[in-house]
Image 1 (cartoon, rainbow, N blue to C red):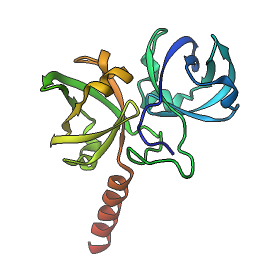
Image 2 (image 1 turned 180 degrees about the vertical axis):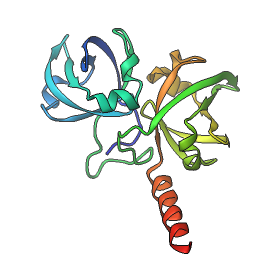
Image 3 (image 1 turned 90 degrees about the horizontal axis):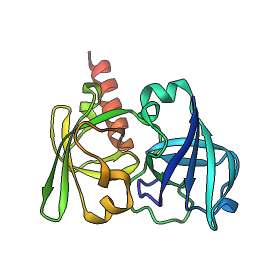
Image 4 (image 1 turned 135 degrees about the vertical axis):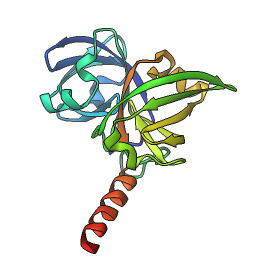
Length: 202
């Protein structure tokens, strides 16, 4: 489990097929083989780790064809900035919302415009995910916990404050870029309960 609060921004430094190598600021001694790290919202398993620089780490992950088909990972090129989050620990502050790291689909940025000190992004999600989008509901985009401002069918908007733009990859995203989308866990189960209730009533 994760919270959608990014704790580091890594960089993809090598890839060969489904094997990716990422550098980060985490202490290599704190990363265990088999540990989970959310990379742009995708929960991936560390298969190799080494020291990088004075205090950082370089870790490898293997990505299945299933994950490649459902996320933006297939598009990642060396040099890409990646939002990273370590798993939630018992007793830690839950500052975002509950995020599983299981990506539901890919959204595309339709517009980006200044909104006061913040930046408002409008995105288009797959139609199948429209029932899970709710105004003032939570959503994880590239692993970042955000609040939906408005919704129209499968198109929705979010606002990012300057801090979030500075400490995540969102500062460099623009119209046409694609991001990993995970709907709110609560919304998923509410929609499923409503669906099964309709089925019983008919």
